[in-house]
Picture 1: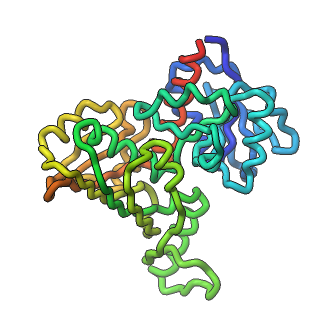
Picture 2 (picture 1 turned 90 degrees about the vertical axis):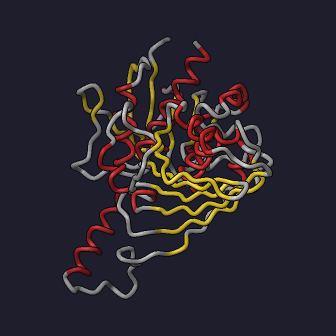
Length: 318
């Protein structure tokens, strides 16, 4: 494989995690750059192979310089994706903002890799939103053995689901409220509070599981790290718990646990060998199964899966 010139376009915390997993991978990286779609603070900098990574302002970037762009931005920034793709480089849209575009595949590694054959239509491939990736990985092994007719999911979203800045806000609000200092009247309350989070992921899910009926409820919770989901999946057939456990145990991306919490998960995982989608509290219900899933949404659902997807793309081309 030729040396790859790769650009990361994401917030600082995620850029660091992507660079870490890229360094651990077997990809032959010639040069890594950061495109500052979210400007870094003066003291923030990313290192790769013990060298500082160059940071490029969006107005100065030449997308044609790169073989691949790992993009984790908002819909309003999608013009950067279009410009990069038109320049000939492969764009991995890490949050699925382009999922509704015809001809753009939505791929979760190991689940529907065959869709990568459609990549060259637009030079864009979507890794779904972390909520969707976690759902898909949790259901794919199960669906190999049992057809599902309905899935009901409650997602508990941590502060890190949004950004490192949101984590900092939660830390500050928690400290202030514990010390009896009230928040400003117009300040969104994150600490000691929950709120609904509205987003429609039906297009992303339908591109992977076209006929699956999924009901998803998303709730913002006062947790710093770790995306947790309670999943109830129903079939027309009785489900054998041992078959389900065996399917999960054979999946390299999944670890079965007796108990796991989002916070512990975020604190303990640092590299490719330990980062997993954790499944626990697995039990059979009438014509169905219930379980609890936890993943570090930045390390696993974004950084790890994006680098895994990148490797699959360029291994196909080599």
